[in-house]
Image (tube, rainbow, N blue to C red; front, side):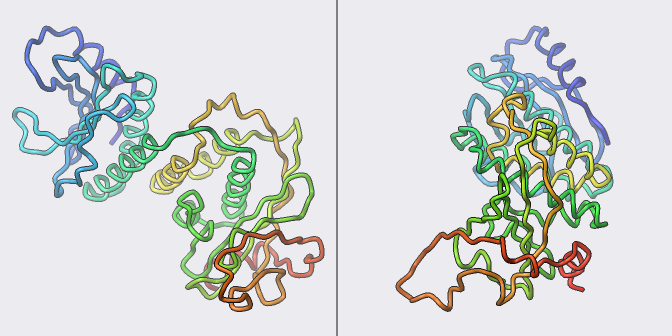
Amino acid sequence: MGVSISQAESAWSALAQEQEDGHGYKTIPLLIDEFQVHAGVKFPERSPSVLISFNQADPSSDYQIRDLRGLSLEITKLKGSDARWLCVTKQPNGEFALFKLIAKDLLDTISNLTEVSPDHCFQRVFQRVRTWIDFLRLEKRGMSQNAQVGLFGELMVIQGLKVLGMSSREVASAWVGPSRALHDFEFLASSLEVKTSLNNEKMIYVDSPEQLQPMGKPKLLLGFVELTLDESGQTLPELLEKCLEDLQDDPIAVSDFETQILKTDFYALEACEYKQRYTSADVAYFEVTDDFPRLKRENLPSEILSVRYQTSLKHSGDLIISPEIALQALRGG
């Protein structure tokens, strides 16, 4: 199963030249399998489209959108086909570059899902479309430096866990930080919160007492990443691309990873706009126990409803555990 954006562009170009006075879609198949993908042009507007067939129950009304940042989404039927089709179409007022980016992402997602059932493939594609809808509905202003530093730290942890021998799917499916989860990684046995410090401060910000407290898991680990601004280091886009390379052995992991990235403001800026370069020491892992410097909810007066605080790790070196022990704890060993 494989289809490329260049194939779609060729189809759009050919279809746009056709004489057509009616309404609806004219399409060229890009993939004919249990899972069908067509490139199309919607007339009379002559707007390029990507059409994906499915046999499951109709998605929610969120997939019927007339105009979202110059794009439309609809569920329809095509002449001569009993299947329902999810259609993503560029509106006349839309930017082709944005439409092409989304079309390429959907085609790449489908091409990567070579070893899954059609039903699973449908679910993945609809999840991807849902994430793009959420992304387009947000007002994107770009990432603050704090947000960039935080994402850089989480990506460093992903790289580090891969080096330790964790599988691509295991680490990518556990990463939930961009989904605004309480902890950045949720493994079957333990949670992992990542904190990143810039310029050797060894100081971390904690958003709530619960953030450094095991919640529904036997153990909570903290991964601490120290970054330094360094012209010889990596930019955030370079590290992200390296993580993607490391996950390429598992298409499901790539899909999970890219879905999380879409939930950040990363794509609000062009790659060339991320100018800061960072180097990092190895990730330091702590098991958050009673000796760890933190506030506990049970020790706070009930009148304290929320609190954000700083804590220093300068004197907590004896609480560090080895990466191997951290890996064992995350896997439940």
